[in-house]
Image 1 (spheres, rainbow, N blue to C red):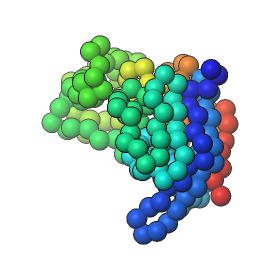
Image 2 (image 1 turned 180 degrees about the horizontal axis):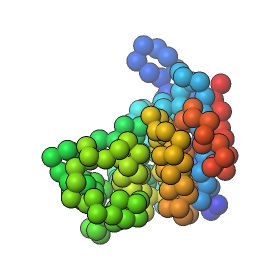
Image 3 (image 1 turned 60 degrees about the horizontal axis):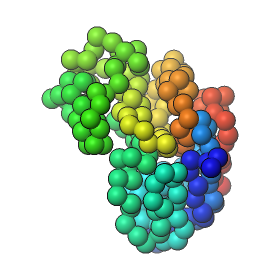
Length: 206
């Protein structure tokens, strides 16, 4: 099987009556795909539907090695723990916990028994005992990425990961994605034109 994620045309209806119909999607191993479009085009809606955070009214999503997620059915057990990793636009951290403790909590929530990847992997060695509030936005997003890539989920979804980052920190984050992607597939939702040189393919929503 050459793909890691395959979905049919998906229909999602939001409160207020707005309906989106998204085209079929296929993500390949090691592929970094940019999902772009104007504000209101449905980028985040599509991302959240794939993650099982919004109900689908028609269609299905399949991730290799995991049960098929059908519209109007509950999200398959462990979908957001084992099938995919989600990197939200705004990283949430418990400021009362150290970075290492935040990562350990994330590992526990995913049912992982292995130790979290060291912060040195994202250039933050020596800051394990610090609170997230002591980090810059760029550093927080690197920890956010490390958390999303925990485990063996074959698909990573990232929603506007470079929002609010300056050019230097945005480039560091994009290089990090390339370094740790491996055979996974990553779909990045963003209107940030700086991502284009780093991706394999661009999907544009009207």
